[in-house]
Image (cartoon, rainbow, N blue to C red; front, side):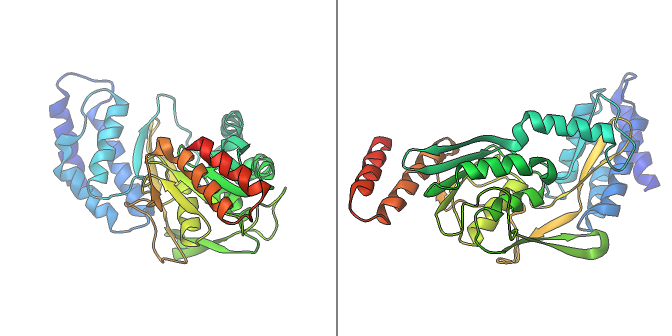
Length: 338
């Protein structure tokens, strides 16, 4: 490690040229601590040696300017060149980062206020033509904060005949919150995903809840999930779980490919590292979507996914509806969408 640090520090000093506000010692320190955190916490223990070797061999690729964001980006790129994990990344903050391992009460209040402004991830909940429910979820906020809002959204669509869950702009969040929403789509307790944590070498199981606040959509009516290239992490968990449990049809694009949850740790006053400490494991496939994403059942451009899913939902309802006024109404609605 000392040889690695000396090499990295010397290389950065040479690249600096002029004195900069982000100096070589700071960059070397941030790199050293990043390696240490990967060694201590990353879900794959072998990753630290790969990261250290990459930093030792590829130091010239690191940004040597005074720009903290550029240095964080280049350090992330170098680490990901040997550890293919989209969750693993370094961040730069112009504001000083807190030193506590857990957020302070004031920080939690700020986080909750931010999530509240975003309606805890619920962008829209409505009834589309043909009595098709539609819920647009942009994130999976902390479960205790989001439960009431999610309950209200799911109650809005509880009496619809089919449901579309839009995750095209959802980049993830809490696995437990994703599981809470899944609970509205089953009639009985169902095992949806496991997470293996390096800490304690333990496996945490996630099951849908026996009871939910508000009204349940139920486990028999058809469900479609919309995805895009931006769909990530906990949102991918939702799509992967329901796809493999044969509970939903995925429409859209292959998702981002991040299946390793983790934690954010401060490296110094202005740099932090998100280090994946766990790995999602499906009880159905015994694997996950890391690096490959969730493939849609119906591939289509993300911008067209809602129209396609709505048509598919109507066609499904028509197929299951006896001849009569309701079937005729559904057919007319489908024709207007075409």
